[in-house]
Image 1 (cartoon, rainbow, N blue to C red):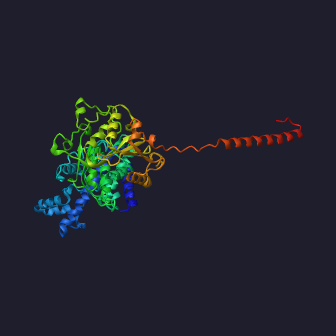
Image 2: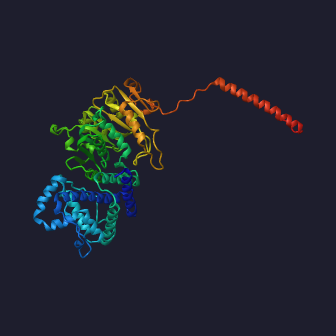
Image 3: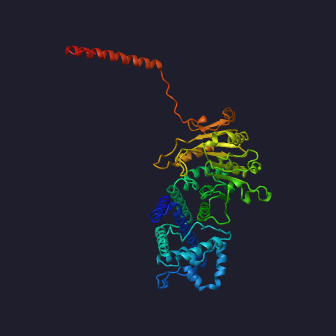
Length: 542
């Protein structure tokens, strides 16, 4: 499918969502819309695989299959009814091939038929299907995946009949809207990402916290995968593990995977952590919807700053994990409450604790601790981390003295849904080759929009190219020595090193004086001529 068709599918689905949600706020409706799209993907993928597995035994649709109430059972449902003794072996095969099982009655084809015939069993069947997918479909349990979906919510209608009717309409519209488009993994995955972005844009700043715009996600992804690339062929190698400690809906992790795969490379496993339960569920769906097997990723629900994930807990050496690439867009300047014990935490002990008023450096140090010696970390942070004093200055100074800060990239304002302030990208490495810091001031390079500014391909390409080759360009980028940074008190304010201000045009005072003298002479001459005319007319002269 072309990019134009993908965009059209996304816009079609968004138009359906915008039309159907009515008085329901965007946050609430998002969970229904995206869950149904996710079920549609799982079902289509499963039925296509079942068709290949069963071959000529897969039933064909016949007019006489329609039941008295107008309901048309799916081919797989008819096969289940006719082959009860073979179901167990068939499902074992499906688990080996597609890594999950969905019962025929829970497939989208069955759900959309219940919706089309306005069958009162729709809500019960959906609830049963969601529970089965959470607990039994996959080898790894996805408990609570649909926990935010309340099919009996009064937001859908005051009575069971009204709720059933509303759900029937939503499901029918999605089925109709998607029917004329290709439904491969990449297409539906991109449509899902598009909808997440649209819901984030329409839900206000708070809802935008979990979403990193694709254009910025692309920059981070290119940066952290660069070191795996063969300079001669341009192909990328393998990243064993990729991590995002505040993964939101997972778009950053998926972008890293896409970038490295597009260049011939591979990713071993993706790991993410998210504290918001709704967003955590979105991320898990997003991974599966992009064709990832449940063994290829792991998303953990918990507080990153409290380090609740055993996989990352260095106190158990057998579980020590290091990452080849780390990306993150943590909540900006989050207030947190570190306790005394945290001062001895292995993540912070050498640096000190970030202030209670802003956990930015706490997130940074958490990720940086788990970065491999050859890995790269790219994190989005507010500009304050570059110049604020106190404890943040101490942390920043140590990172600089240890030669861990590789690049500072300043981005334009109003790129994010969650804030209008300009932000920066810090690139960190544990074993950095260069002994300077590259500053890129891209704050003036963007396309202005009515509500949101954006970066086009040329803006993104220039940032990545400048980073890749450590280019220097007047009013855009510069490599700054540690001696100069030290003289500036380890302040990393970008404009100190790369100013975007235009140089003032030098003024030739002698020429200015000549010009003014000439002007005065012309004024005197014209005044005399004017007075002669006034005298002739008998009028008072000037």
